[in-house]
Length: 235
Picture 1 (cartoon, helix red, strand yellow):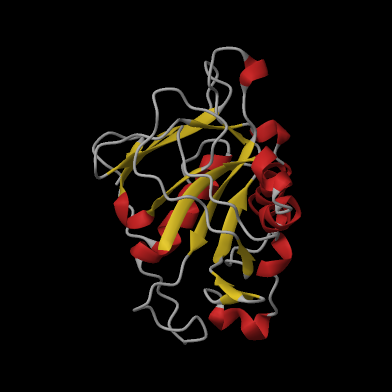
Picture 2 (picture 1 turned 180 degrees about the vertical axis):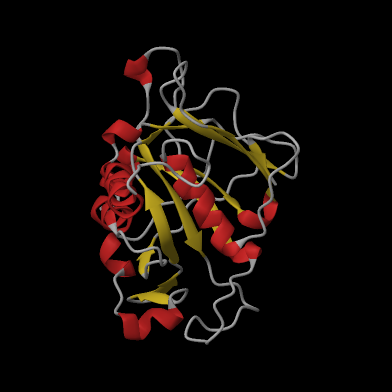
């Protein structure tokens, strides 16, 4: 899909200690100020399938970010509420992260087995309001306040990869994102954790846990998410 390609500061610009985390939107780059966003959660091995051929699949990460709005309280505040206008859900191709030197940061967040959001700063993803007819190797992101619904299709015997589609309030739908769970180490680790704790690798729905369950869990922690009358659509 078409997206802006503004150059981003190198990864080191966004490195920051926990003590400085409360000012994460004002990271300074020598003579100029640059805005970073907090990478709350990330999931690897999430692909865009531009064509029926698997060789065209584009590897990437889905992630949830927090940007600090001017009216938002300091991150050091005791309040844990994050307004939906400050949350961003997006997908970034692996090649983009590698070229920006951000792959290690996203991988670390992906493999963090804690259920709490992390404190890593990254370049902001490009906020997009629409997509082109042909999905391509471009990142896309949308503010959570602009998400109308998320369509979920869990993996099944007839379709190996589970997928999600993000639909916006303006009527746009972003490219379907496919979760290659057998290649995603964090999903494999979570299934093992469920098996140890509950003696089975199944999620709350009773189906085998998959990456889409984790993404839905991110959203439920910060947003009011409800299942629509259609069972696989969440509003």
